[in-house]
Length: 500
Image (cartoon, rainbow, N blue to C red; front, top):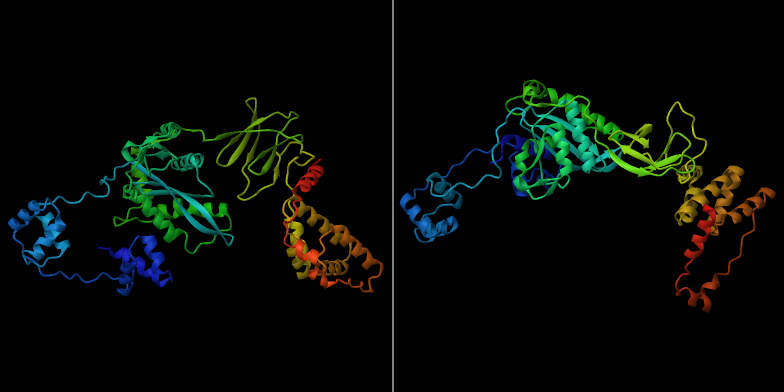
């Protein structure tokens, strides 16, 4: 029987425009069941109980033993041989009531809510719009079972290091932790085995011991063992994500933090109307208090220092103070980086905003470096944006001309942008029109066209006669079916000479 709250939720989602297929997937119900509940407008149906069928208990027991405990065969013999019209669910219920057949084992053991005993962690994937663009993000949530406190954070990707950073952040915010952390059979914390036989990764076992808890995996297909965590994700889907807009990852996590630690902290939960903030005050004496100044988890990376004093990390460049150009150790924390050489901390940098790449950073209050990193990329997005903004004809020309990738593309864009700054917009547009007409992509040719227009700006340039009969020539017909020449060898030579 589907309870009244779930029926109301199904009808509310239907009224908001969600399809039957999506409702069925999210709530894990059959589509026919969803359609029936929508027809009933989410109301509980009136109970209709069929007339009780009388079956001799002795007959049931005899048939059950004769059929080796197979209730389906008992049902067939009752209908076909005894002439008793009884449904299969009614028969199985009668067998359970009489104690003839044992009830089916529940999906997971019922564990009572005990203060300070348990917290639950899990992740799930959502597609969320950031600044109007959909992004596939991982939501990590920690749930304190007794007091029903939550801590929520989103990540681009989630691995073992980020799992440690998240648990440290959540437990440090609470100041307390439970004795056990229930997880699924994820390889982020599990080495091998499943359920009670699971062996935890030694690294994660030591991490949990520092905070006073141990990881426990629930049995396979027993996700209800952490039902509070699963219900929390449903609350995220139905209460946090709808009706909110997010400008960036930082904005998303700021709103998630406020929702989980402020709004949900003081909102009554469940039928008991329990307020997590008040329940936590009672549970504190049963929880494990975290040690003061508990060090945050970090990950060590070896990096070299280029001739201009920069160390590269995840697409950005960080200046290493001093004059030495030796290798450094980069300690990656959840929110910052530390640069070490010979056990001496040279600099500390906050991690850049999400999505920022190819940026350079230097510590404040020290002499700033005069040069750019040696291997820093020189993107041309800004040049292309300005060129396309000049006129739609320039955009059509760029769509044709920007087929090459890599260095050749950026080199062409820089030269074309420089040409647009050297001549007037009117002359530049005339150059682009002629180049698009005759399919010209060579910068020297574009420069010669510009010189001709500058010499006689009022006189139109003569048209170039093209003999269209070349397509019918025997040499053209023969050559068009041959393989295209491979110029990659010469491209590598040109790229090498540019780098030198």
